[in-house]
Length: 425
Image (cartoon, rainbow, N blue to C red):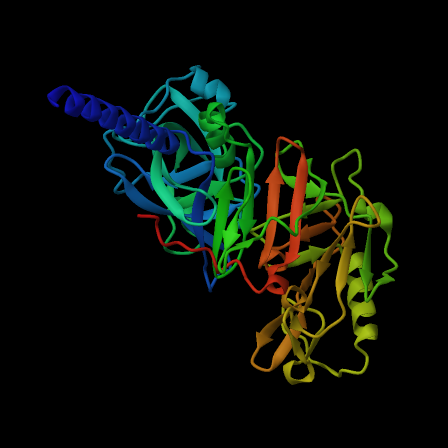
């Protein structure tokens, strides 16, 4: 009898150990992460909280889709027992493409050591840059199975820069301490996550779902919104183009309004040998910016298609505005003509509905949410702004070099506000 009990006990302990080991492996080898996004009402920039340092501390960052790295100010209140500044000409410096030895005349501390790597950090709103110290420290991020947040997971030697506080002085929300870059570069946030967790089957993919309380995913789909909607199912795909600066572009062949071609200079839609032209995506620009000739053609064509609705005095920075009461409402926003971005194939279109093309710029005044970018010829001809991406899932798949886009999730009776951030017990 005693031997039978001992045998049962051994089997029970073995099974329990196997289950615990399996669960620990799930936690130690996650293949998906999630971050909550908050839209700052004043700047219209997106902010996320990332846990860094030892002991772990929640730090707010502006999300910059095309940023090359994560930077944070370290001049005040940076306390961490795991902070380390790699020495000049180290492998970390090479990875960050740093060829400058940083020298600091102030007292030693985070952001101020001699013979460390110097890297340029940038305020993406003002364009102001400053030499910063390359550093590494613990970063913690929440895992997910796609529908709820799971356990926190640590990246012990995450590379970032300690930047001077002058970079925070203009253009950014007053609450943030830095910028989290998502660009295609060696030490951006998605690149480092893919590098650290790649052996665990982590896909070099991330996705944005912008909204006042939106979400960002790292790793491959599926992703779910309440009420249990797989928001990756309606994705269409187009080739993802990456500029030499690591910025994200897509090919737009033409523009349609109300299923009619808008007459534009299609030469502006291609990237020339000087790297000028084409269509870039951005979370820093709140609204889509169009080269002046494209802006003029789009606004005139849109107005013609809405000729039955009287215009009102424009509200800056927009060029065409209407009385808000003139529009009928639909599930996907004001009932206005659809705007289609025709992509690499004439059958592949990113459709922009009223919820993403019309914005209430003042009480009772709704405007076409596109901005005149002028005649400058030193950048993208079209910059897709954050407002046009709201409540659309936009997925950046590095492994397959493709961009996934859903068009409005409002059609599927959900939105980017609907991720269930209730942690799984």
